[in-house]
Image (cartoon, rainbow, N blue to C red; front, side, top):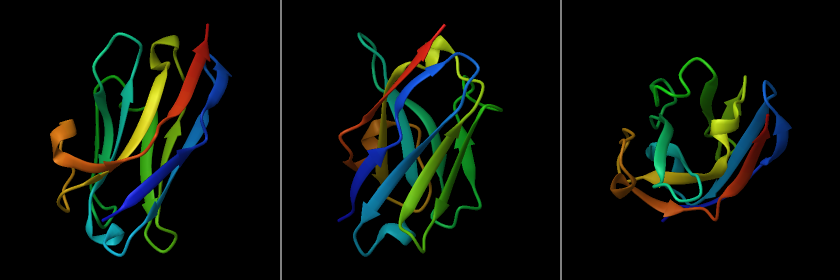
Length: 124
């Protein structure tokens, strides 16, 4: 089973950038899709971005398309989320999760091994 730990969150002004990292442990990391989700206060956890096992396929929520980029380095067992042009509505706790298959899904039920989350706060 894969375990994940997120890092890189913080406070940033609107229009700024942050890069989140997700360090994974476990022998099957390179075989599995990975995803980033976020949860704002009072809201459900929502899909942000997903990446296939190889890194060749990426998927994004409409709200972040063109601003966020997901990538992975299987040699380092790490997944990244580069966030540019941040908006106040991007404020949330961001979670990394390992998928159950090689292709990322859009729903939380399609992921295992959630991290503890990292807070991203965008000030306007």
